[in-house]
Image: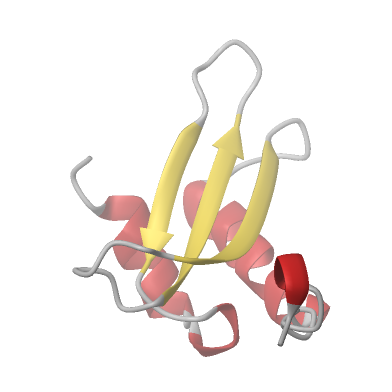
Length: 90
């Protein structure tokens, strides 16, 4: 039994996959280094969610933070997924 979640920790996300998604976001959206891009893999508790999803946060100076979601684990995200998420209507 895992008390308080100890022993149930998932393995860390592949940093190479995270770096690839960040590079795709920067290239597709034309962001320079002044725009902060963060990518996380989360477990979605909503029954309508696929379970694991990837969340992309874009933080540009002087603008509200934007969040984009891809309904896949980070390791399965493709450049086409990122393009679709960036161009989806909020």
